[in-house]
Image (cartoon, rainbow, N blue to C red; front, side, top):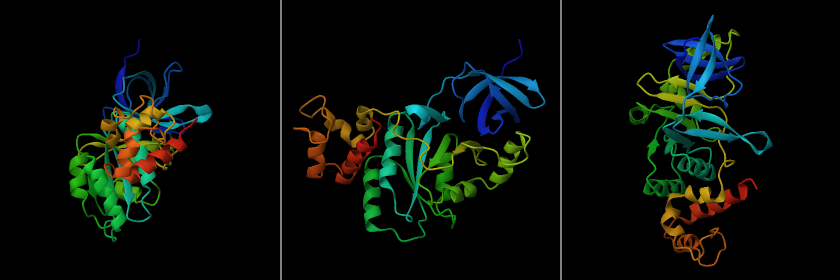
Length: 292
């Protein structure tokens, strides 16, 4: 039997999967019986020669992010992530509904979540500052940076060390500018990965994992909706809002949906100001967005 080599999945390519092992990149296929492989997976593969290989084993994942797929199914986007950094900016207008959606998914997947406010060289609206305080009070770390001006990057680099991170957020927030600032030779690394496909051009279609020069790994994923609510139940959505947890057991009915239910402690807390009414209203909107 061929020797099984340990590897790390760093990209999906047009012709297969890029697996890094001992400083080399192999273009691999997978055994049909295996589940879908994703970036960040630790795998075992066989060397087929000429930079080719076949993935034989996927090691158990400590975390995985899923995205909606066809026929109401889900597909893995990235695995073994330690922290999801939700990037947003002073401009365009902050999509707090999207932020809460990402946070809810993280809460249900045992993945740490943190916030990055970009473009801090622009004036901060009082309403945004008020919302940011809510997240701070809930225990979500907040990093204020200006990728364009190079402000606040040192603190961010320190926290990115020694862990696997992924950036996500709405378009126009400067995610690419921030990634390029943290990985100065990103294009060179991208070209190296793409050369594995023998096409000589950038053929990655999904997430790509980069080793940060100061330590740690960063998974860069294009697009906004890299993961959605497809794999969450109503109960899990409630679980995704930290401030709801001490209140849920105080609701009059054990099957309370926290909408118009009689004796709902969560709604009462939002109405009294004990928890943020803005977060509660976004919870209601996310409930409406959930697949039926």
